[in-house]
Image (cartoon, rainbow, N blue to C red; front, side, top):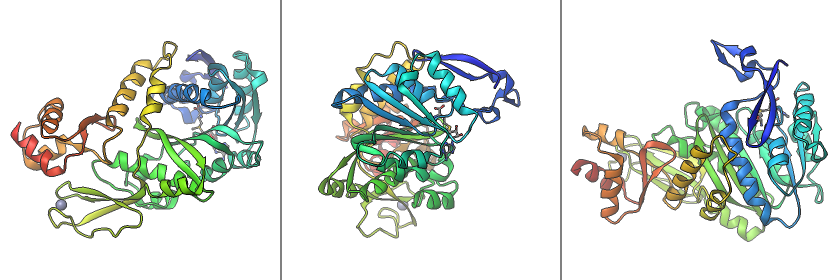
Length: 390
Ligand SMILES: C[S@@+](CC[C@H](N)C(=O)[O-])C[C@H]1O[C@@H](n2cnc3c(N)ncnc32)[C@H](O)[C@@H]1O
Ligand SMILES: [Zn+2]
C-alpha cells in the first residue's frame, strides 16, 4: 500500500496515501487496498469518548472487539486513548489489512494490548461467545448494514456491555429501497420527511430484537444520524422482566403524507388504515425503537470528557448539546420548510417557531436530524397555526 500517516486524537495511523487512490480527482476509500475513510473521524472520536465514559462503570479492565477493523483505526485508538483497556481484538477478512493493523499497533506502542485475526467477523465473535471470553465493548462498523453481525455480537457481549453499531445503508433504512430494508432489517421503512429518525429507530429495533431472544434488555445510550450513516450505542442487560420492558418500546409509526400527521403505536396495538386528521392514506413504518434514542446522563458523561486532542471537538460538542436538548421529546420531527411549502407560507426563523410553540405550552427543540426541523410535543395542527401566525 502506498501510505502516509495521519493523526486522529493522540493516535498516529498509517493510512492509504489519498493521492494514490482517487476517483474523479478525489480520494476514494474503496480504491485503496485497505479501507480507511477520513470522514469517519467524527464517529471514531465520539467512540473514543463513549468508551472513556463507559470504562469507569466497569469493575475490571475492558475487553474490546473491533471485528471489522480495516486498518485498525478504531481498535488502535481504543487501546491508545482509553485508559483501562486491557485487550483489543481486531479482525478483518482482508489479508492486506492485517500487517497494516500490526504496524499501526507498533507505531503507537500498543502491541501488548492488541490481537489481530484474519477472520470473518461472525467467526471471531462466536469464538468469544462463552462466558469468560466475552467482551465489554463491541464495535460493529461494517460496509452497509450491521444486521448480519448483530446476533454473534450479542452472544459475545458481557452482561451490561455496550454494543456499538453503524449502518451506512441509509437509502434502504430511509425507504428509498424498501425491499432491501425488509430483507436486511425485517422492517418497513418510512420514506417521509422524518425518514432519518425512522431509519435510525429501525436499525436500533433490529439490534434490540436480536438481544431480546436472549432475555437481554436494551438501553440506547447514544444514537445519532449524520453524514451518510446511523450510529447507536446499546447497553445490554440480562433479565427477562427488563427485556419485556425493552420489548414494550418496540412499535410502529403511522404517517400521513398528505397532511403531515403522525402517531406512534406499540408493537401489539392495532394500526390505523387512514389518517386521524384528514382521512388520507397512512404509511406504516416499523417495527422500530420508540424508546429514548440516548441517555441524558450518558451524554453528560461524554460532555465532561476532555476533547482537546480531538480534531472534531467543536462538531462533537455542538451535536451532543443538541442531542441532550431533543432527547426527551417524542419520536419524529417536523421540517418547517415542508410545512410552510404545504401551507404556501414564507418560512419563519426556526428560533421564532420554537419560541412560539413553547409559549403555547409545548416542549420543543432543534434536532440534530435536520437543520430546518423541530422536535416537539405539539401536534401538527399547532405547528401549522404557529407558522401561519408568525
Ligand atoms: C467500513 S470498513 C471498517 C472501517 C474501520 N472500522 C474504520 O473505522 O476505519 C469494513 C471492514 O470490514 C471488512 N469486512 C467485510 N466483511 C467482513 C467480514 N465478514 N468479516 C470480517 N471483516 C469483514 C472489510 O475488509 C473492511 O475493512
Ligand atoms: Zn392526513
